[in-house]
Length: 291
Image (tube, rainbow, N blue to C red; front, side, top):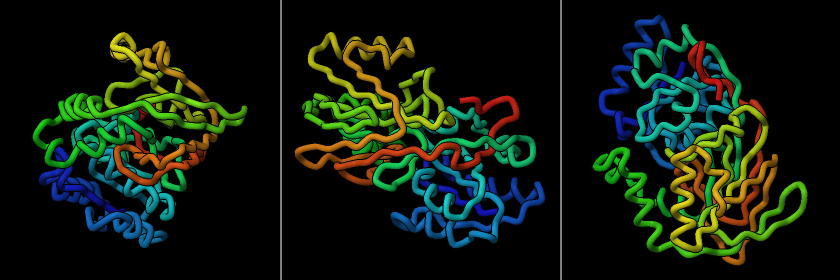
């Protein structure tokens, strides 16, 4: 099997040696793939091992996973996640243990779960892709900021981004027609949870559907309503949030807007969002991973 670990992740220090030793003790042949050699390098290194390995073990945060995802799909192997990032949204969704030995143990003691893979302009992702506020937040969440603030990096960078954020217009083509949105944030989610705070129990990671959320905050009451809805885990029901469900969305704008996927900048508008149902298998706990 192949192993790639982002040693610059929040919990990445010493994780490569730890994981390598744990996997070899369990009797696995381990091929270590360098991580962090530039955009696309990790995916290409993984894809080059197609037919030579039977699983991919990737250690890092959601950004590391989305960087590795194209290569994992090309290699055609199941994925084991070692949660080493700041938020680890996918790992939390699938109830993957944060303890490295326990996570490695899923190769024998867990089960394989098929999950959907979403894409924006051909760039695959697991959790969500966004235009607007979260893109600005992602750009402010540098490795240094995340290392210094930990979980506080999310609210701190969000507040800083809000001060500079202005609403804009987006045209969205859906399966049922076209709609215009005035928004500060447009998110196309694949999973039921994202952004460290957003949850929508009606959505799943294996239902073959995408959820579109548009947030139109015009007053402080709107902002407060979003905060309350987040606290009650009813984000989609907030009065200033529009929620649509579908398998394909095309987003257009009068000027180009950056699109981030799982916290990583990947493309710009116009942007086409699609979903590939149950396209990848992940190792999850026997009694978990039901998202």
